[in-house]
Length: 153
Image (cartoon, rainbow, N blue to C red):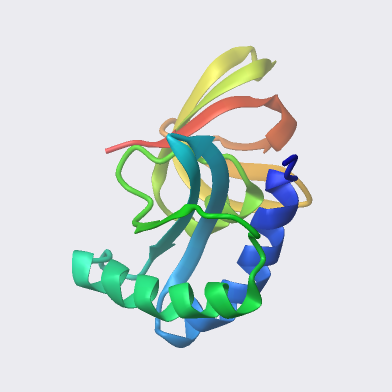
């Protein structure tokens, strides 16, 4: 059976986001991909971090909802987790989510003659990440220029 992973992710995101936010958490991402069988990964967070108990509570709440809505017409594994320390920043929402945090961007296309930028995420607007470097420069980096973005610690 051929399945459109991105379409499933979008449908699941729209379904679970209000539930997760209603529980006091933020939805960071949804991933649906084949690993050892299909895995639906719900990544959530909250101020101060998320606990294993929080992940269990979210899992119980959305598992029943997913069963009723039957978005995925075959068996899969549901995994609920936190973004983690080494989570890649791949979408505009990720940069907005971690606004104020230090990040390292590896670029495909240079900005200010460099392919690596370390700085504080100021925000994102119209596909442009705004980052203030350690030298105090404010750079506007198109998401399409970013090969890899990660938080720095």
